[in-house]
Length: 299
Image (tube, rainbow, N blue to C red):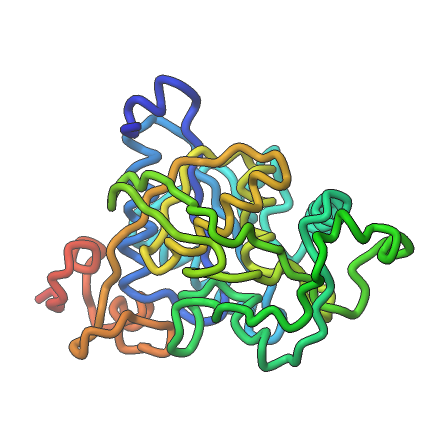
């Protein structure tokens, strides 16, 4: 469905969702601008959501810089941590009750199971995969803690559990099932559960939900109708479709942007400080230059 058709069918609600773990770079600028433009074209509402779950890496300085840099680019939004709105709070660090309710729903439905694997196995679970050091995906879980029976069939064993506790929890994927969806930018997509991705984390032993769970909970609660983000999150979309189904949420529309890469062909990360919006501003570039890719200082 095109943006125009979507706008006719339902009021369009898009979102910007920066993670305050570093300064935003030009890749973020282009993706967030695409999200802003699609909401604007649909005469819709744009939500700013600060994805600050990673307490060790998130910083209020980066959060403030993200808002400032995006406004410098000419972007604005209708709801967010700085302007309020009916679906707050708009910082994930303040939305723990929403995530806990979702965990309980998944547990009650028998979709998840406890996992006692090491911290090293969990390194990529909290942040969006594109924020990792080099990998763009959560590795396929080998099934070490996966119960032989579906969790719904062994509910008596787990009946005493009322909260996640100091243990990790994984979503049991339907092995062999193809998860298919249409991407508004890249066309038809297809990933096979158990082959392209495995049982993924939804809750960490340190008391935090994973990126996958927090994302679907917030997109549903904030009534997001289209998710615009980088193509490195295509496989995350397949996981989130399974979570939406398990939680009886409606899927939004999907639009994944092509990635900006460095001279070596690798996608940009926040460690590429020379291409951060903040540095480009200091070099004298204009917002138009940043957004069009013509990185020449103004004279």
